Length: 308
Image 1 (tube, rainbow, N blue to C red):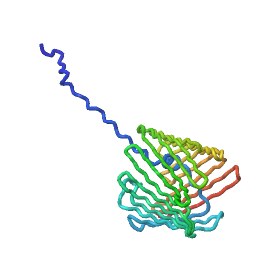
Image 2: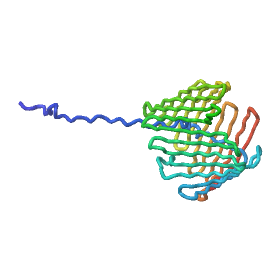
Image 3: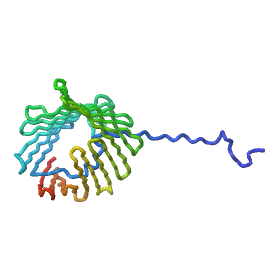
């Protein structure tokens, strides 16, 4: 008899191809774990500031900043940046050289290099007039699903002093990242190390991050309610200073009015807000900020104009 039920032989059944799992993403840098939450909070403003940006070419741009404040003498900063031809992403271009010098001759400079496809290097220098304050060298290796970083700060072979920081992040799933930080410092008569563990969980509309170590704890929560509203909550505890701080910030975007509003309130009885307003078609951005500390009875405000 034939196959009266019309069933195909077992060998003729179509086979389902095995489901390919998507590779885990790179977790990014350790310093950017709390970036989404910190970008919600307003930056401190005090006095009057004028910033003029000028793009000289596709690789080079400069900025002039004049700041006048009641807390100190007026200051001027010259900022210059050079970006090379190797662009890995919209925010990553190599090589990059950034420098900032004020009217007293103090310099802050950074150099970012791409040594290989996965290996990056950074050098940071800071001077106060003719005296070196900080020199730092970073090496970062980015694998498919992990990032390893080694930093040397103020290495002094003659004085036998150095600060060494090691970071490691590993993506366990598409949402969960775990890692740690080891800080080692050495100078004559003193030596020590601090270990910190870190974790980050990313959902569709929110991100939770936690750092815990012998030096304290740092936790943050970021939530994007919609295209206009973002909120962030941050908790920091320092065991050495015996101090804890809780902060709440919010970010409101009004695209039709070309306005961005940021505000904060923390456990130190401090409230603050910054309002930014773009003036199209002119390349001008106005910003007005005010901050009040009820506990210390201190108030300061600021106003800035950015051209370009």
